[in-house]
Image (cartoon, rainbow, N blue to C red; front, side, top):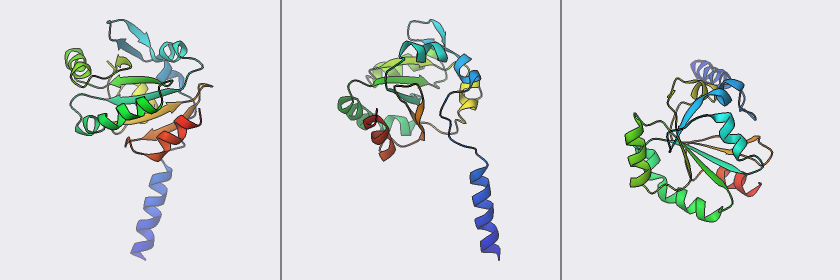
Amino acid sequence: MKYIAVLLFLFFSSCSKGQDLVEFPDKALADVFVSIDGVQTSFGSVLETHKGETIFIDIWAAWCRDCIKSMPQLKKLQEDFPKTTFLFLSLDKGIDSWKKGIKKYNLVGEHYFMSSGWKGPFATAIDLDWIPRYMVIDTTGKISLYRAIAIDDYRIQEALKNN
């Protein structure tokens, strides 16, 4: 009986997270990030800039061990999908450490600092609970992969190939 109770608890607690998003909520789109040049811009404006493109989003930080370990595979992904826009959203503790991390790990792509952090509108809207976090936006602007936390997740390749 205890075994059944535990299974039911796990089932219902996993269901309570809600469905994967296919579109970003307004509060996520309105969240303001800082570009590498120091310009503040909304996440919605960033997406609008790349309208019609496949976008791979990598939410990371230079202090994140799992993020750093995944970088060789990330660079391979960039080679395999050269037409994809790679968008890096940083949760570093400060702008200086963020910029040093980009340089140190030679990250090629478009970079933004999430000044609102873990508890900001974007992070809460997408239920951010771990980094790295990978997402794929298809050419229609829909989220085709909502949540992956490992760069070798087969769904990443699938989502990128289907766009």
